[in-house]
Length: 189
Image: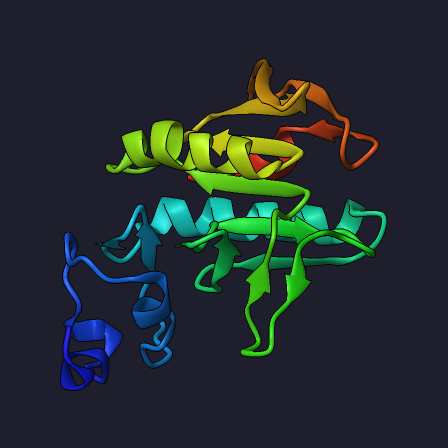
């Protein structure tokens, strides 16, 4: 790819474009959700109202209960090896292996990642799941419209702890507390 092509804005990049990690990371900043997995660019459409409500409610919840560190939302790059993802919500604990880079992004696995399922559900359930497992994300939540699936890293594999509907609760090993799902789903729709 030519230097001129690298200089094009992220908004001009299309899903399926092949780029090296170095070329992708040299692209200008953008508010659009653009990820880079296995050398291929993935551009996501803007989220739905429900998606944003779930993201914001989860962000608010985590900010209130996380024992230390910081909570972030997309779009913000997280480098996992040569791949770049933008999790919907993620928590970085104090002293985490997930650390700021020189270009003000993150490198390494956050302790907790939350993805809100949308029309590209397979990407969150398969591609990102495998990537997060491979890089050692300690806990992974997949949010549907009215449920959350929770996975915990055990012996280098993300193991399903269960699926929980509104009105139920589960224990978060990484946060060390009980999560009441109504705090995510109540009034989200």
